Length: 189
Image 1 (cartoon, one colour):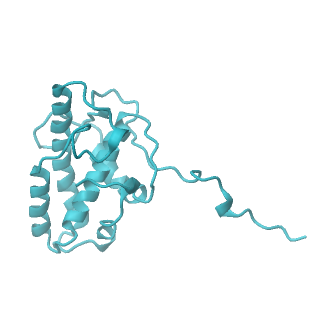
Image 2 (image 1 turned 60 degrees about the vertical axis):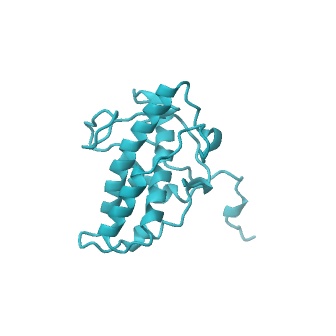
């Protein structure tokens, strides 16, 4: 008798390769709205502690962006994962914003405007992620979250430009092709 290889499509739904999680899970860090306020390598002023490691959460977002975009589900294992999720969705928003700009200078202007734009905090009207992030306990916690994410988004915008555009100012088509992908089927507006 001829033996057949097991059918790959016969696996249980949900099994398969898991998404990439943050390496900072379990790290000692303050939290706001369920997100870990992890150290950042940045010169931008804000509440984030300075990073002494070679890789910070922004590096993780960029490193794992393309593989994580292929997943519709993400099992949150801690505050660092929530930070990774929000910043991944922010990077997706930045790629979409730069999609119509061929030159780096134009993309830079567009991202600067995007970063300065107000964005909702967890639990506020317009918050796109539902109950995935806990609502702030008080106004101070919500403001701490907003300030941290503003600082992280500014740094992410700078580094996104570095991967999306080549040194000569032309666009990297491989990164640009991910502008239409939706991480977990969600997007920030």
